[in-house]
Image (cartoon, rainbow, N blue to C red; front, side, top):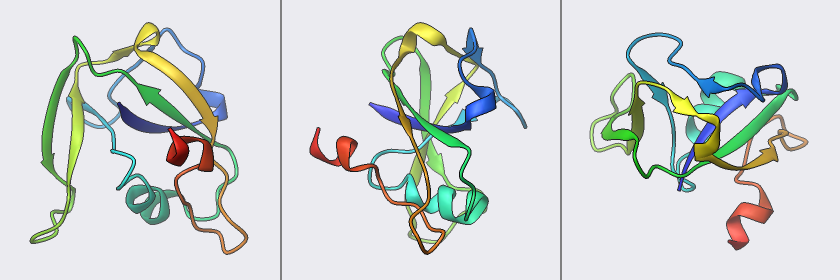
Amino acid sequence: MILHITTTAGWPVERVSPVDGDFVHCSDPGTVHLPANRLFAGRSDLVLLVVDPAGLDVRWEPGDPPIPGGPWFPHVYGSIPAPSVVAVYPFPPGPDGLFELPAALARS
């Protein structure tokens, strides 16, 4: 499974489409906190979509901007149809304004 961060206003939709380019930015459970903290620190209007990548054009690529030796992220080229989203979790920041993987996902 891969993860995509979106707003509560941005879900549900029939498909998640790329916003800035050819792909939808995604993460894996071990890296989702990195873009969340860099791009969304302190926001309380987010959800985390759990996406089944089967049948999607997923390419693992360096982050943007690339970090030498840093993690690679799954990018979905094209859009993500709603049936590929298998779960949705609230994604609030902690008291310090930073994000961690939701406990329910960490256990699964």
